[in-house]
Amino acid sequence: MDQKQIQVMLLYVSIGLRVLSARIVLLLALALTFSLFAWAMYWPTHERIACATIFALLVFIPVIRMDSKLKSDRIVVAPEGAQNE
Image (tube, rainbow, N blue to C red):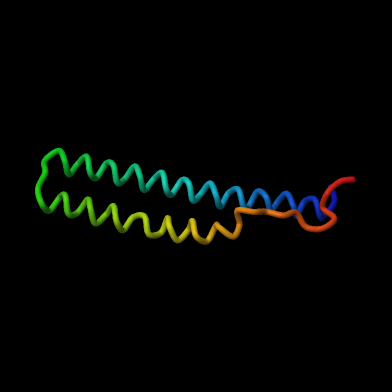
């Protein structure tokens, strides 16, 4: 492998890891929101439901920001001369 091929491979790996980390954060946010709503519904009070609702609204703000940053990385084009002939 020459230097260009290594750079292309590292580019693809780094983009893949960023996408996976965004998906893991999303799944973690979904799991935490579900568990908090399950706790709120076990013994429902206005405070618990308000806490779960506020958490559900605020927890997805970082996920939305991370997803909007990744939109530019969704289409990956290999650099010139990186393909084997």
